[in-house]
Length: 375
Ligand code: GMT
Image (cartoon, rainbow, N blue to C red):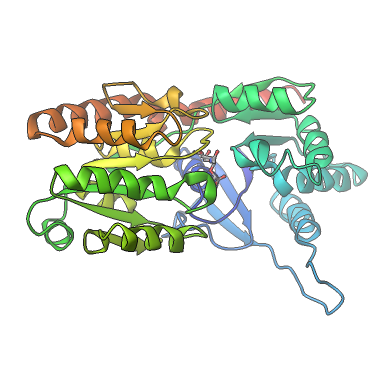
């Protein structure tokens, strides 16, 4: 198949998932055309069946807000026509689903048909999409898609609850390439972070308010009082300064490292002992799944779709949003001795296999075939 993929090219989960999907499809022999404003971060190296088309957004003094959606729809039209694409798969509804609708209508006027598949990822529905400034466009463009998928049952339910959707939404859970995350720790790196063999706790996110990163610091503070440990923060975003401030206040700065945005997550995960995800909401929690694939247990909140990927007391633990005391208690329970930690590590790695790329990507291929055969 000749497939167009539209996504955010950033470290965010939707961009990561879309890029990994495109790479897996290309490995299956499909031709995959990425249409984004920047090279996706996980699209590194040369892959013969992958093509990348950059969306250029010309500026003009009149534009306080350069019209990205218009530029994106025009690029979609150009790429679809010139590469004879058979379908367009857009990830994250805003503004990709409405730009796809526009492209589809332009092509229809020229006698061409391109089916559009929209994958809903989370905040496009639960946070941003629900805002009344976007909701009518989001509702309309989702309904105009030829097929709709959501990354969890919870996100599917949330979508039906908050939008008037007249079509089926298929749940296709996110996936992880288990083989890629099965890494041996780099000893020299581990020694730099934890020279005395301390336990390593890890959090990775975009540091937005929804992630509640100060809860991560508080949990670490409680763990650190009982168990020699270090905390690694991966990623960056608006709440980083607040998290740093709290570290200073709690006097744990010497044991906390902010390493910024990182591409080689598998190497970082390989040295960690516990992943913390304290979000107020996660439609799925791809970062937690990647941690499990690396054999790292997870302590998370029980928000949104997280119960769909966690197994309480086996791969880690879930607690209520903001219940720092219980979450700390869980973290200490996992980390208290080597034997117990090893049990959780093995169980996490085993559980992640249920979400392996090899079993989930065929579900997308099947959906594409269904959409194309219903034309
Ligand atoms: O977590 C974020 O804020 C980034 C966001 C994105 O769209 O890039 O992530 C969402 O999509 C991921 C991939 O499907 C999910 O794993 C995340 O749970 C989801 N984030 C939220 O729902 C907050």
